[in-house]
Length: 323
Image (cartoon, rainbow, N blue to C red; front, side, top):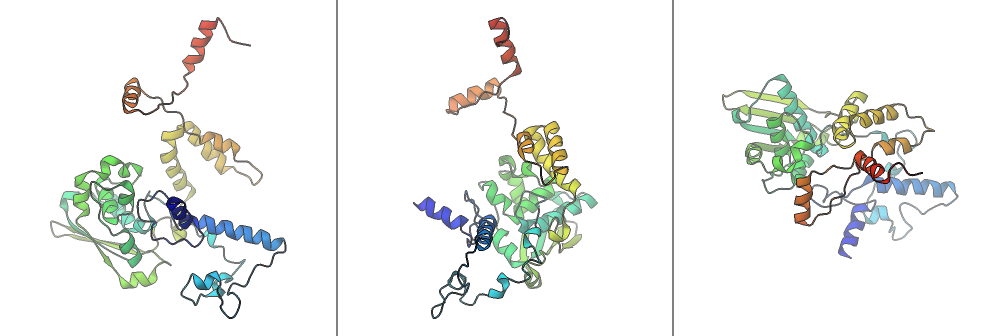
């Protein structure tokens, strides 16, 4: 019952985001659920249903928009520029496998590394100024005992591992990197500060500024307002393909990944997704003998991937192919 109630709280259209930045198995504040309600409402209205007043009925006015707010919701926002402005098109993409609040500082660090090499041992301190939401939600420090969820929602960890590795991909969130004390030692030298002006500008822009203080006395400052792959800096098709190939090649192989890209690029409104979905199924893993024995000792079940030689062996035993 507790799990069911928690799940309901995570997927309800008015779910808050308090739990998003913690290591729960569900992510709250899911806009898809609200979108589903909107589509259902549109079809019901088209069918002739009139619904109820948004503000409720007098004298209580106990409508959801009032009871779930501070009592004075801005009802005009519900229909503002309706039919003219499509917020669903203001999509943010993720250039790195981290929270959007962290993209700015990581982008600045990786940009610096393209300009010149910077070694962790030479860094005395990294000061980051950004808006309040980013500091409160992702300004936490992680430890070698942290989960990868804690790490990907930590500005200090993400900035540190990006500076050391020169990249931020799923590999930087694997157990070995999350447990590396050297990463956390550098992360401890990251200092976050809220900038009131940046807080006022958020969420229209997601500003961030970094100041690297090197041990030799040099100070390097960089700032970004419109972060990478935000609605104002959308990725190119080539960049999206590069990210897809980085993630898909190890799972479905380069050939199938390339075919999937070609299919997506040539999609027409009348096409079905079936050919694409068949390409996106991961190849069964081929376990080595030692991996099978280790899994057996630990009680895990290993599904055996089919081999081409199996069919040949069966043919040999039966004296030919079956008809």
